[in-house]
Length: 367
Image 1 (spheres, helix red, strand yellow):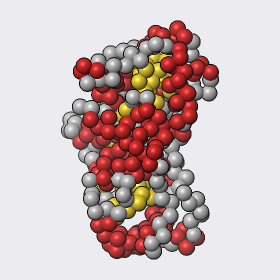
Image 2 (cartoon, one colour):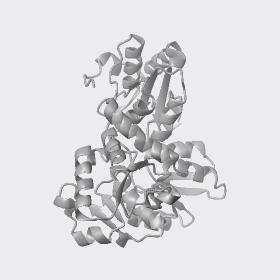
Image 3 (cartoon, rainbow, N blue to C red):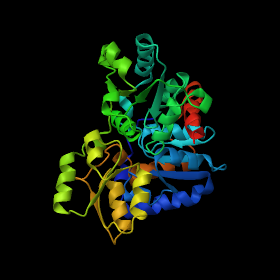
């Protein structure tokens, strides 16, 4: 990947100049180009997105467009990898090559393979890995090779149920689930399925055997990778208490990447898409405090001006990685496409892509 710095000719332009030139490039590139904008992007970038949504949904939408040659993913690196996996014939570009994901970086394929081997040595029980799409392609591939599947925050409960179901019912016959890389999503889903926090243990890849004893592994149903999203980790029970004290009628909804104690105290938890639907489909709820990234919350507030919608807590919750992508970066990327020398392309090696695709396909096949 090309990590060169952006030319100053782009950063010196005004917002209006950048907007005009991006619109011009979009017209020139026409139907061979699709721009994908993740919900956590700024409004300036979202204004030029052909599709707006969560990471996997965006990749699937791009894959459905047969004539697309170029996919510009305004998101983070693992999202661009998924787009390449599902659209291998297209050129996928990430406007800022350093736009990564701190949570995805907490699990690499070597550590995941070691964990799977460690658990196989420590227990005769069948352990099936379930990996959040917020992970690298290499980790997705390691998951597939171990008989596991990917999940999203929308379908994680269905995927966990698939993993635990007998093979005769189309499941993976898991005795235990290794949930990678978000421990909050793992424990919140387990509890939502009727299990208890005592059924969960945390595997720390920095420690021998994850820092777990043989007895802990034996009794656990869910082995949770030690990892979290720093944006959602910031939401606390104190924020919920303060919101309810200020406005007793407020409805608090948080993302399942939030800590367990926060989710337990909220009125509801759901993925980004589920949060959007809940606000739209609850006409009688006029007051919302939402525990997720602030760009999305602010966009919901602008869309539903008849309601009071704000980010839970006392400060904005922003993904600094998403913020790396801005109008100068987007224009620069489109200019390189127009000149036939695309930069910051993302391509997953085919041997990794094939297995990662299998982990995604297993998830998609689960109903």
